[in-house]
Image (cartoon, rainbow, N blue to C red):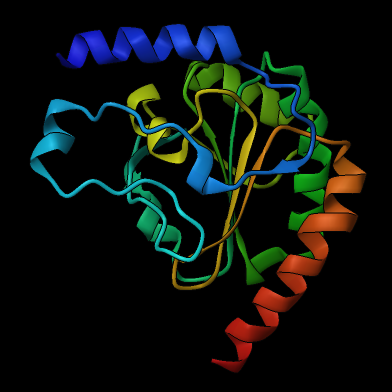
Length: 194
């Protein structure tokens, strides 16, 4: 069953990768449900939903160490699901770097990649001088964030509660100025007041 789900997920990703639904905020109530893995069927399922805690999926950092999404729930956080071969994802990355430059240690940024090998991700990050963190995630686990097409961007508050969900891409500068900056200004202020 797990193998069949992984193959189905790979096929769905290949068919819908690098979605062109530029800059649209998604109504989570209209997103299709995915068949869970055998392991997930035994647990209480949790898919990404605005206003609820983000699903706690495992990740592998580029140095090979294991972590999980909840390790980033100490500050407002941006999670972006992407790939080096996805032109829409690549177009969005300068906006992510602008966010890292402006807010530095007040926020977490994690670029999650389900298709590239760690060396290719590291090389891409170094060549583009991106200073935010990147990690690998399994394709199956990325589906908890409805990442059957990429890029997918999720913003959480300091407690890991999903504040915004974006599917598709727009120009990095526009994404920073219209969406990221106003949202993180408020989230950082709220985190400091808490």
